[in-house]
Image (cartoon, rainbow, N blue to C red):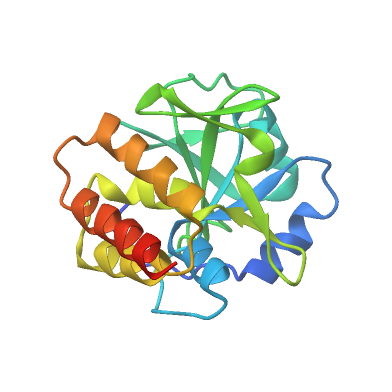
Amino acid sequence: MHADPNAPWSPLSVSEVAERFAAVDVDWWVAGGVAIDLFLGYQAREHADLDLEMRREDREALFDVFEGWELFFVSASTLIPWRRGEYLDDQVFGVWGRASEEHLWGVEVLLADGDATTWKFRRDNSIQLPREELTLEALDGVRYCTPEVQLLYKAKRHRPKDDADMVRCLYRMTEEQHRWLIAAIERSEPGHPWLDLIARWCDDRELDD
């Protein structure tokens, strides 16, 4: 079964995803650049794909949410077919889906680490957040990853689009969100160029107050 991770995408819309998850009793939320848009309240840029996230322990529900689809898990930058009932190692962090081999990629689902009460950053489990603080709710009721966590994921690569996302979020985030993000980046990416910018923003806002 051919699965090219570089093949084009035709991502589902958030409303299409919400409709699919409506029949399944599991938590899920929007991640990636679309989550940033939901936080901002407008679409800041085009998105080539759609990232979702859910609790790792709920992963088997994906076979019901995307019934009839082909699902693949990511291992060593390779996409491997994943079928109902097959074991999925805890080192797997992403599942890709498409309607069939003839269709383009429609969705990627990230598997969140932690337990019933605490989210843990997969690159450093000492970086944590209470589950109830991990997501926010959009006007239509769809939940999305809070910006400080999403920016933490983006900090590792900080491509131009990630830098732009960070700047857009900066003035809308709370002081508590800023401080959490600074501490998390200092631990995971010491010396990161975002640190001075975020700290200066916090200092300038304190002076304005």
